[in-house]
Image 1 (cartoon, one colour):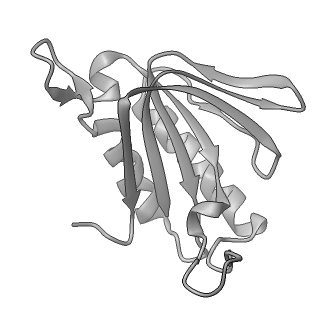
Image 2 (tube, rainbow, N blue to C red; image 1 turned 135 degrees about the vertical axis):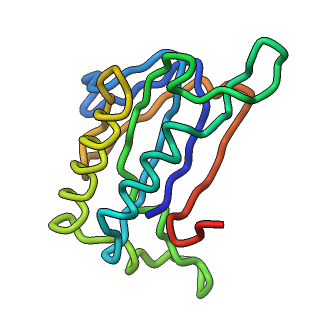
Length: 150
């Protein structure tokens, strides 16, 4: 499972011009799911996202988590995070999980994040053509792969 996390002042997602998810200060999280992802990956990554200290404290040091600041999370599924680009110029997405595998994993991650954060998780629509808008704060962008737990 791979995520790209962006610290945002605000973010939103639209499908067919309808606003389906919106947050103010918090994290915009793009998640890519592979066939091999498990409950352990979901738990590890969800806890990592919630506790990642990338918000400034009173001294301007990144020392607070989204939980500490009372922030929000917008979670967007994005299979292209598993693009293989080593050969040729057309990415291969063969490592990305098919919807019948990925949707339950995505839904489980929403459930886990909802249990960890005291406010509802905003989401996109799995498999939809989404338009995501954001105001990146910093900018701060972090990539995490549950296969590389260093």
